[in-house]
Length: 178
Image (cartoon, rainbow, N blue to C red):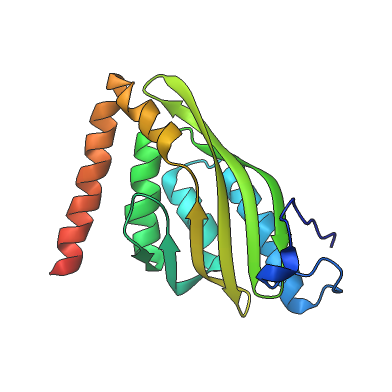
């Protein structure tokens, strides 16, 4: 497998070494990057999206992203991340633009695109994933939420979908407390 190192300043600082020969753990990280790209390329539905990633996620995966509390587990990924996100932007898809991998880590740069309130929206993301035994145990997403927030605030047609997504999150949060 070919290894791609993106424009990270010093990959070795993050446990990534572009001159180290690929071993089984690096190959697993490369396979993860390929599957990640495939999963985001053109999701057929919310459930198909969540089902695609489930085999790659540790059952206790920790998901961190701006604007949401950390999420834990497969069910939270589907119900508190994927379902509200695709309710808001049903045609959401992502194009991977670069990546860097190491034995237990992968950085993936991509642009997410879709239609929000009848108009296109796009924002850049960098996900840092930590892998253990070939499974993702943590995913932390880094992005500037301002373009997405600006799009939501300036598109009144999107407000009902935003309200529904928020209700789904609140319903799940209340159910998790009981």
